[in-house]
Amino acid sequence: MTWEIIRSASNPDKEPDRPKAPIKPLIATFSPVQEVEDAEKKTDNEIFKDIYKKEPLVRMCIDSLVKGCVSGGYFFRPKKLVDYKDLLVRRKIEYLDFLFSEISPDYNMNELFWDLYSDYFTYYDAYQEIGVSDKLTKSKLLKLLKSKTDIYDIPLMVSLFPIPAETIMPIVDEDGTVKYYEQKLTSTKKKKFPSNIIIHYRVPNPVKSTTGFSALKTLSDPVAVSLNLRNYNGKFFENNATPRLHLDLPKGGPEEVAAFMEKATQELKGKPHKNIVTGGGVTVKPINISNKDMEFSQLSSNIRDEIIGVMGLQPVILGQVETANRANSITQYAIFKSLSIKPSQKIVIDRVNREILVKRLGIRDVVMATKAIDNVDLMEQGKIDQTDLAWAIKHIDEIRAERGMEPSTWAKGKPYNPLASLQPLTTQPKPEEPEEE
Image (cartoon, rainbow, N blue to C red; front, side, top):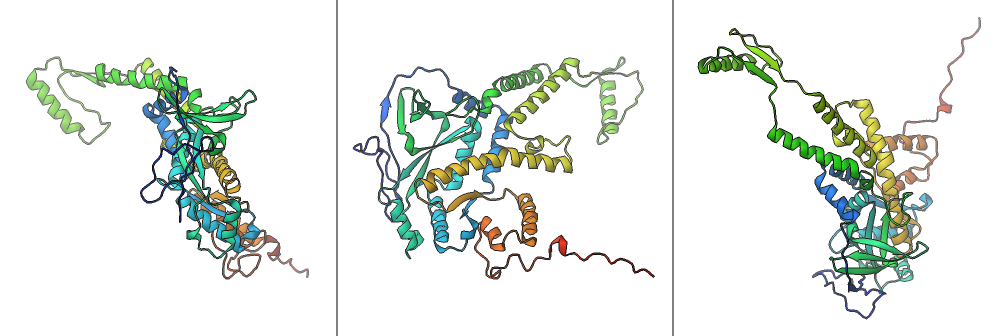
């Protein structure tokens, strides 16, 4: 298998400045680095990166969203389930499995997805540079797939390289069309990428037409308040922490105080909330939390709810179970998956299918799909599948194809699973009516 370094279409005569890997040279595209004057202040993306580093709740939210999107993994399946037995379709799936397992010299696709979703939920934009081999065209790839060539002997046609979202942005013309992408390398250096070698994953929004609009922009004020509250709270306990009780022994010298402490320790150790009564005229003065302290606590709680709400999470996802029970925990988890995880996965997977499978590889009858996040997803989908089988809505091999599995060896074209005990409700026997005497 031959790997080639591909020069950028914007500068074909320039020698590539990225060295070959020792084992597998890169498939890549390159653009010239330009010297520019740049005296800009801190950008929004740099601020968002600081927020992620400094605000624990924001990091918890972003990390939970990323893990939810990547935990299940991905697979390839026929676009039309009637093609699940087509030999060429199955060879395309095998080739895509091979290609995406080695789509980058330094990362596999699961690792690239982790980077991608981290940027996606932080900046609401994510970028990848795509390289295409000049030794293999879409027609040549199709010819090899139709032949008996071993899948692992077919050259890898595409490679991907992650680009940190905080360093790159689209440059548009007056009509709003993207002319090229510009990456900030240092304070004085920028690099241009032609628009056709960048895959831009963007969260649609009504504010910006060419880039995402990060939730952290909306949360800039609440996050600032949260950071100030945490700073104030730390200084308060460092400099002004107060005890819960003031115990006054009016006749207490050192010996009496020591005796009282020994008695209190014996009576109270291991017995929480128990009252202690002693002689000697002890006066107990509780030191209660003030109204201002209560307002401080409530403000912190309100800010927490505001942050996780805008980020699209529910309290139970972050381990906040004070008011959780089995019923509302399941509901919160279902909302998290349906409103936050699955829509984001769909945007990313649709972009991969369009930009890589269709445009670069010419593969239209196979699509990338995401696996179930967990066993709860599998159980819920299993109930739907059982109903579809029982009512002959789907064939067992169609369901297997939806899960990325090979066709069965026993179904033999039957419309439902013969091992299933389900049967349509219309076949249930009716109760016999009593005979009239």
